[in-house]
Image (cartoon, rainbow, N blue to C red):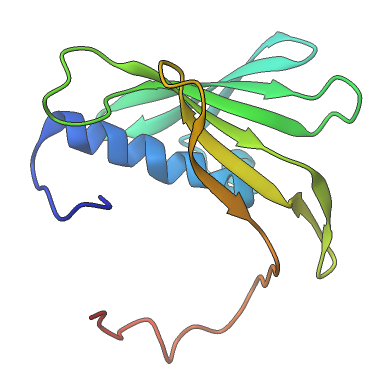
Length: 143
């Protein structure tokens, strides 16, 4: 988590798992190639995506732009921290889609807690590199 390491806390584990799957907005093939991920169509522009979380699943509501067909929002009920008594709607927004380094990707993104109404994190993509050999870096330790 951004504020440090918290181990074996169920609410933090739930939030971290949704955070990880929420980042898949930049890795869309994982949502169709991972056999543990299940899609359920709601209508022409909305689906439920069920992702693994230990022995159970967690659910995202996925909304697509009706004009472009591109992913627009990933929404889930998520704990903000370990002290929360209930979950809060957590919204990942994919901004403008464009081609970057030969890949169509959301060029911007934002993450909002519904009860706050404004993004607490905003992302801008400047470069996309896939299938890079990271073997020299995989075992490096951080600070």
